[in-house]
Image (cartoon, rainbow, N blue to C red; front, side, top):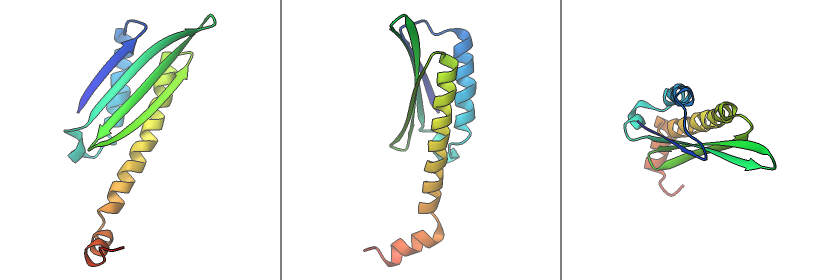
Length: 118
């Protein structure tokens, strides 16, 4: 699995990079093994200043077998933005895995084979 980290508006620190890698490694465990080889994860951090306040944005994008799972969060703290985006991606990954498993069950395959018009 390829993981890319980007930052705009500030310098990406070593602590934030380590924390991001641990969060992403926890998410990678939820990806089915057969999809891990071609999967790509892009994490983009941004910092914007509005009315004397700095807002931090974290967007996480997983690309799995042609399907993109995206989550974006804006908060005052970069670490909390990453945490919330990781939770959103985790829920999307669970839904994606459940959908893939339902499509490949024996009953569903037999139904598609014997009744292709439905």
